[in-house]
Image (cartoon, rainbow, N blue to C red):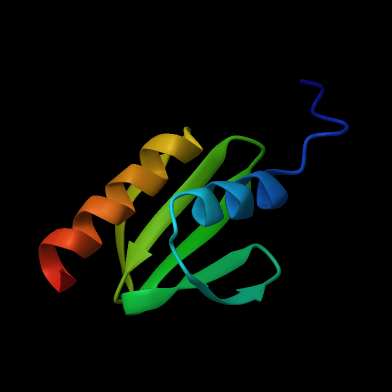
Length: 78
């Protein structure tokens, strides 16, 4: 996939929708999710996950990021 045509935000939003993780708001490179999660798009394949203002981890794989969020929501808000 060419980086010229790759849209990391669109790909992330597609992944979140696929995993049924609800987006509350989009602001530029920031995606606000339910339960005070925030994802910052830092590059073509780099996403920083934050929760309640604290950095949780960087992710290079959207599927792993979404699975982590889904499991964390299930464990903590289930």
